[in-house]
Amino acid sequence: MRWVKLALLCLGFYVLYFTIRQVGLGAIWENIHRIGWPLLPVLLVYPFIYAFNTLGWLYSFPRNLPKHIPWTDLYVIRIIGETLNEIIPFSASLGGEPVKADFLKRRHGVPLAEGYASLLIVHTTFYVSLNLFVIGGILATLKTMPLTPVLWQSVTIFLGVLGLVAALLIGGLHLGIFKKVHELGEIFKWWKHDSDQKKTKFLELDKDIKKFYTHNKRNFFLSVFWNFLAWFAGAFEVYFVGRLMGLPIGFSEAWLLESLIQVLRIVTFFIPSSVGLQEGGIMLIFSQLGFNQASGLAFALIRRAREIVWIAVGLTLWSLIKEKPASKNT
Image (cartoon, rainbow, N blue to C red):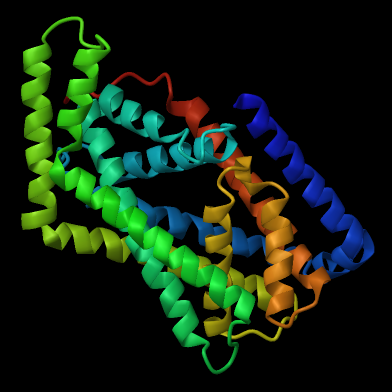
């Protein structure tokens, strides 16, 4: 299976090379050079996206986090985890999730099961908010930038599949996913000792998760709300870059573009960092919506440059805090 994933990564790089060659480096550089230094402030949009996502995560814990845990620490852990999601190959953008849970345990004494539960819950609110964001982008541009039949079909299928995934995940958590984890641990001998004690803790956690969905609807909707604002902040980034490139787009068109780009990122998860397919897909989206291919690819490369900058930030933060001892308050 590993060689298949490696082949997919190579395919992604080939698509990127073929796309750049087809459009032409000269046309791409002309679009990027036209912006110049004013592009740098656009990098400041992403901290707000991380901040909103962190708030979405904060409201996804089945039990309230201890008050001594600073929000800034949760923010940094989120950045590090998302960075690792981007760069760990063959992990389907989930390679950083165990690191988030591990940081919470080692630095603040949050049990691993509770950390993983929060990450599972926030993924449900993540998917629900993305569905709402995509639908909003389509509705906002029905008259100004209607989707082509190809895009309509693709988005409809995506919304159906993503909605099903969210429903199944919520259903699994509601029915007691950690009880099943304990049963698997019994079968494969994961628990060397204190199996009954672990079972009790897992059953309590399942109870807390079920209570979260049935009695703590406020936190569920707050998590959806903050994750939705994170998607919305991404639309501002598209708007600013588009205006700097001289593209005739308003905010509603930027909302639609960001919606379609996020759809593209989700469906190309099997390629590490969506290399190649993201660039080619963005170029295709731009052309489907009436923009020229060079502008689409230039935009995609600017976006990739921003990702590289924040990957560097995430790795720097990781190097600074990974050896820091846990808080004494835990």
